[in-house]
Length: 232
Image (tube, rainbow, N blue to C red; front, top):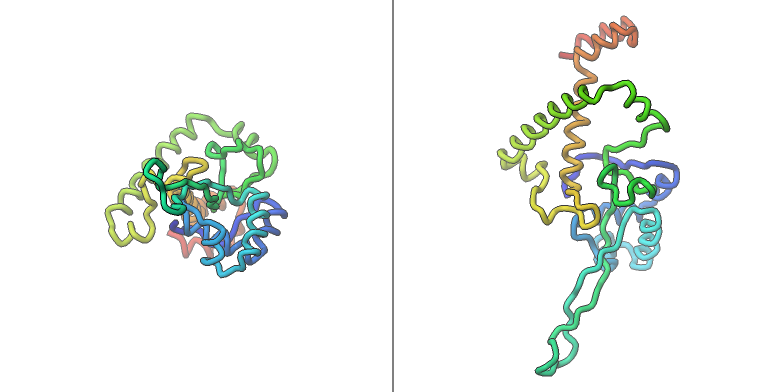
């Protein structure tokens, strides 16, 4: 899976403790690379170079804190010489581990579990989102949604039409690349979150926003004059 963000995102102190362990980070990075298929415990041990006992121990912690989930796969095993009436293969199930990052409408737990945040997502202070909804009009947000959707569509189209960019940055649009847990393409989710956050970064450094801050007395004159010479 392509990576658009650096670092780790923790919703609370407990998740910070989980991410602070080097073995946990190695396991999560390996599972992210193996998305959406996931890896077995044996494969994780091989990829991360961690002892299999360590993988089992950290797997339990990561599962308990909702970082990973189990997916059963059927594997064909031939046992001995089958008779003419016997199916030559006996199916057994082997658990594979997949990374689990859920948010909003795609959260299969509907916000009832402290699931780790996907890259670029945040938890707002209690009451802030509800207050903000009182300060905005639905029509205003719908206009912005249409503009942002048009922006996302153009960026995605240009990415797909450039082979070099497509291979390195464009998210896969194959149906089998969707998550087996929530049904969402995690790579596409991260891609769109990244382009929208990058747009906000550029907006906050634009002359339009800097001038707005100055007009609201939210930046000093010295800082404004210094910044104004560097922004377009």
